[in-house]
Length: 257
Image 1 (tube, rainbow, N blue to C red):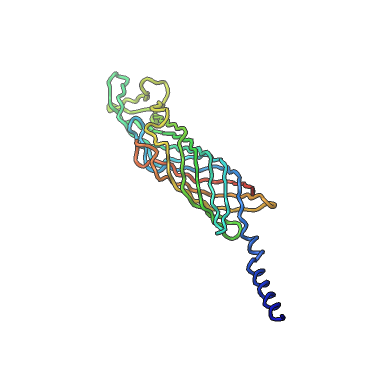
Image 2 (spheres, rainbow, N blue to C red; image 1 turned 45 degrees about the vertical axis):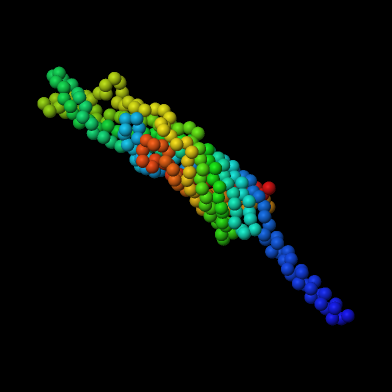
């Protein structure tokens, strides 16, 4: 009888230890919902052509991003989630060119003289984005995440302006004259202003991020994030591998559901 009681006691202890209530609390699985907003530094990838077959490279500018997010913590300690939002990306690209222009001297003679111009192209794109990701947390508050970037270009614009840089020219006979553009009173002319032609609206890329995450109270998380989005597909046929890389500086806030 005594042996039977001792055996029951040992079995009962083993069951309690196997349940490990402390470990069970650490492996709680929960969902989070929240939002994010921030600014971006954008850089051109590849080249693009305007209607006059002028080639632009190395453009850059700023933009903004905003949206909502959902996360689910798994028992493997990985977090799976996605963001959905809008991104406004813009770039400005420039190049100088020296072009022979026919000008008339004071004496009435016409000469072809070299004149300097500045070409400026402003590109603006509005994206609707969906970015699934896998997130890992290290050192309690540092996070790393990686995933594909899927987007649709909802609207686009491209403005190409050509500006005269030389106010005067010297003719071969020594005369000097003021340079003027034909059919315009100013020193610049708009060569193109409208949506991007032959645009590939559906875009695929990859994004990675690193940031900090702080818990406030029992259910709210907030933190800054640095995210890079690299395009893998071209925005259009008029150019060579044209895309816009975006470095985003974000602030995220989310709640446990």
